[in-house]
Image (cartoon, rainbow, N blue to C red; front, side, top):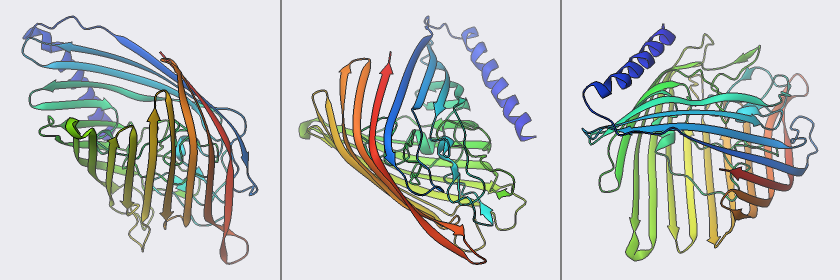
Length: 397
């Protein structure tokens, strides 16, 4: 039923977009296409077989197609499609995955998609649809319908990173295989949804999103991750809200961006213990004289009602831009009481923009995590620490 409602809504949105020219002449819009490809090579030292680092090259490639038509009545109709290919650490596709491999019972944390237990994954590259949406924007704000991110992600404020994909927190590509910090308040990924955002007024903008069912895997998050014997929340009726502030103070050479986000969902899981999901997030980013610093925080109950299953994460970064060079340090920490996983990571490095289409970066990264394993009739914990050199190459049009 939820899928039928979603498809009907998407069809109605498409029909509405097609009907707009009947009452307002549009300026001729053009389809535009862009691509970006990133390769990450690494030499990572890993010693714990239950938390292996990546082997070989990691890769990400995305193609985005957009079109925008502005009508005489001031409304702008937009179309956006995006497809991505990604090869992440084989044990950690789309950030989700398994640490440990032996612990029972096996529960998947909905805030991250991580599980402490079950068979270790060994997945090669995969392709996803990241966006297929239509938007309508006017003096009253903007509405978006289709496959896309919700407002908790769209209006977010976050800490800066040195590298584009292989960051120490919320990584798009994780060469260590041990990244557990994800302070991005997003449990729906690119699942079909409807979104509304107000115009920005005195720097303030607010928005809300509704997702009937969190069921669409994206490159950096998998809301439906879980294999045989792994219990997950199966989130549905997801509501997101966000308020953001963005302002440039030219006289002080200062740019400020801040956001507060919230998400709530029902659980469709038949597993006793899962219930309503709730998460709060906040972020702050400051930019001055070539320096950019920021922090981001997330706290979630992981939809767990049988005791304390909370997930909490902190991210922080400081980056300096000097001409074509970008240098900085970043780090993150997270604790997931539902899965018993706790970890931290940090990275220090530099990148350089060679041309408008080419960027190269290098960094030293380190990640460690503590997670449960079943060594005997009683459960225990083990620790893994992976560190080493990372090289990142990004090409774009």
